[in-house]
Image (cartoon, rainbow, N blue to C red; front, side, top):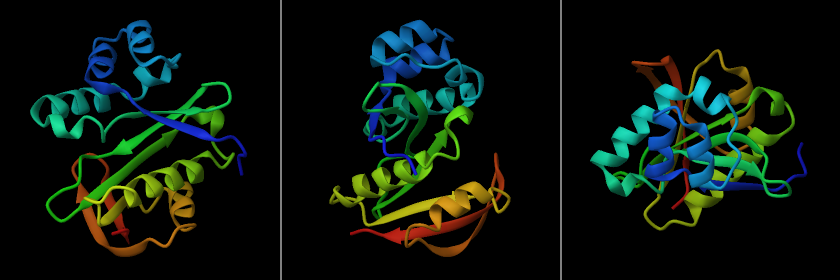
Length: 170
């Protein structure tokens, strides 16, 4: 387990715009973090999706697309956030990814802990959701460290079959 505290920082619409344009230097300047190349390579589709989302629903901007960095040296180790602001039922769905070089060090658990804490602190959030592919044993093991309950399955148009877990927080 990592002993390094993490910082979660929203990328924001301007940073998303720079990422969608493929301008990693500008995105780094706008966010104040030295963003790794993987932010462009593996996440281009996600940045496009989130930029369109925040243009259509500005209230989602502070909830989606966060940089995850170590507090001690501001080294970016992944990304996280939620799929959107809380819906009418007070549900938010978490999202996180750890860069390959930082995997298996406890960072995913630390990120999920921060996301749970963030959700608990917001009065509009009553349920935290996670949807995970049944083949993603690492994410399933991470989520098992928290009191999430398996509430069903869903077919995601991008990711295929997902197991759906929820944690009441409000």
